[in-house]
Image (cartoon, rainbow, N blue to C red; front, side, top):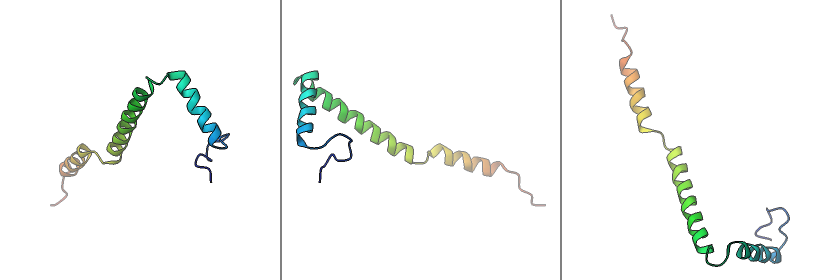
Length: 76
């Protein structure tokens, strides 16, 4: 089973080697560590933002409590 079979046009290891070679030609060997480091940082920030987006805001819970407590009671 090809590990990159989900990418259209990627048939085997030869194409992967060719893509890596083209990336080396475009960016150079000195820039690759810097590019991978910045890619890792941005991926970490994306995951962090995704976690923060999944958690409910603490301010929303406080606002709901305040709204509920401000409603007049109909006890007579």
